[in-house]
Amino acid sequence: MARQLDEQIAGRFAVGRRLRVLDVGMGQGTQALRLARAGHQVTGVERDAAMIAAAREALAGQPEGIRERMRIIEGDGRDTGVHFLPGSFDVVLCHGVLMYVEEPDPLLAGLARMLAPGGLLSLVVRNGDALALRPGLLGDWTGALGAFDTTNYRNRLGLDVRADRLATLTAKLAGIGAPLHTWYGVRVFTDTAPDGAPVPDDLEALLAAEERAGRTDPYRAVAALLHLCGVRG
Image (cartoon, rainbow, N blue to C red; front, side):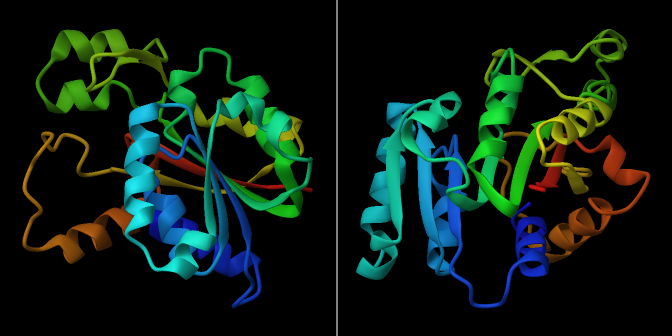
């Protein structure tokens, strides 16, 4: 996903331009910190206290220049209008958040408002068109049959959450003025890997295969996650 995001940034903005980045639901700050290291000015929004603590700890270990380029705000992603003016950012990330939001439309509209004209909106969501694949590959036939006609599922944390379908999100992005520019699949081959599995020795080959599949039909359509990139008109 990081490679996909970098590809979109490189194709849309001038080399060396310091971008204003908003990461909504930044978690422990993995992507926010990575982009701050790349020279961008990054603001992360997160409401979970444990995640904020982890992000601040990771940031504290960085050189001063990187620390100055990143700030962390405790808050809900649906309240971006409280903290920022419309058009304040060149790039807005919302990765792994929509599945926890029962009514995502207000959140999506708020994210689009944060973008400057030509800005990039990056979403990572659970693929509602492929929910039967994981249980099917694991031999859970009852679970696979039950997943075909729903966008609800139970994640690995044991939480009941929701997925999004590509066609539905495509229409929503068009409706909020950030139409879909391109999309990728994420975790095409590796979604059934158990939590805590060791990093394989052939990691680079694995990443290359995932990256190729994530941009290639029909593989990307059955990925566990979708990475959608919209552009503010």
